[in-house]
Image 1 (cartoon, rainbow, N blue to C red):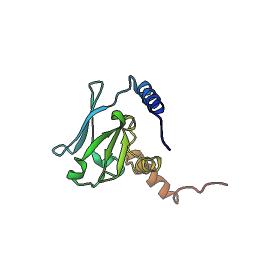
Image 2: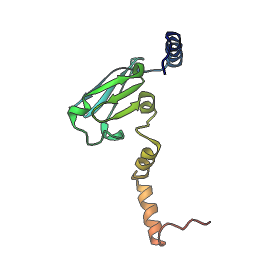
Image 3: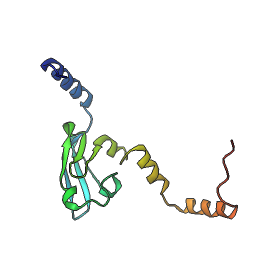
Length: 132
């Protein structure tokens, strides 16, 4: 399917309208010393995160992490060698992967309250069965 110049211009205009006012990445880099991906935003803020939090980046080599590039006018980050893409808006909202990945991460959270509840349930014979 081929797009006309007019269709392309219309899509680009709509993209600019949607993104107007929303912070987006203007630069991204991996800092080996701090083991952080650092994202400079259009509003002057800087956001940094450890790559181990992002689905597909945990355990990646530093050389591969350093090969990060901006996508879509700075609304996405892309690691070609790792086949990983993530949205900047998602990162800013604390979303580091797919819904199932995030559910798995949240389920692994450790806290004193969670440990106490597990011990209490274990003393009662385990988790109660679901009623039909």
